[in-house]
Length: 454
Ligand code: PFF
Image: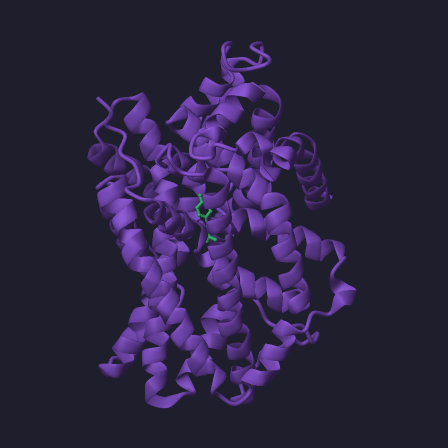
């Protein structure tokens, strides 16, 4: 009996995969990078690289997943065994190692992501505390402390676990369907509101007028590529496992394009909100430039510039702040469920563990890692982000390209692609993509990787 479950429809998959892709990386990471990398120039390079590099790797994950109908470890073993691979000597051990590395990376990403997501919940509650005339509580909610970090991290894990334990259709798909439209609506309402405020125009012009002289700056290229990978949730087996839940009737390249467009679209919308908001904040007297004249970014942007903006808006500011941080929480949640699904699917499929039990045990283990980070924040937080997002994700992405480009038999790859896409063999996709993942992607990723180490 097939107990794997799967998405009920095309839209169900698109919303779930887009839910995974759209997260803190889009709404926080992307605008921050735009602010610190020359505005519109970064936007252009990012869009270009997403199609040039991230989309082909996304396709690799979706095709491997749907063909193998399994988690990343089992899937890589399947495509590299003696019947399916050009090089049976490419032993199962290597594929297993790469698979487990992906699972570990997904789990570690969740361990820091859940902490940041917890802050979003706390920041959404702070204005409520203020409205209720409890300034001490509001202060605790918005100040960095072990107790606050722990409490809200637990809360976020409980939300994530309660969705994942329900399975693909009743958990992941249902909640992505509910939350993604709310997210979109909230962003649009906030953009419209911020656009009416004094100062917003300066933000729009920085954002929409690219400074072409910066397009080829090496540090801009590297940041844009890293952002593209993280943003599409690549290199950790998330898209691979979601791919395994897609029906064989669906046309994979088309689905991949849809997810990529939604991801880019929401990032661009988030920029239209955050960048003008920064300039409105400046207009209201909030510091948005550093002493050296650079735009503030990273945590300063989200946790001081925006709250300062909200509090300069009188009563309505409280409600805008609540909506904004709820939006961040929702975006984080549809991403965190996809991270937890990676190890859970492995436990369910390889070790025959019941889904509910697997979800709770694995959730608890990853939470323990989060506790270690919370208690050793200075030493571990940045380190784990760097190891997972800067090194692990691109490297595993590179290896996945090697698997589809060099290891997996080309005829079997085509056979999988043809399901739901009859004319695959004569399509432009088939003309370009196999060559592309075989040579170009590994080359580009190697160059990026080399540059990011140097
Ligand atoms: N794509 C998510 C974001 O942009 O916030 C982050 C992410 C989700 C990374 C899922 C990795 C992952 F497996």
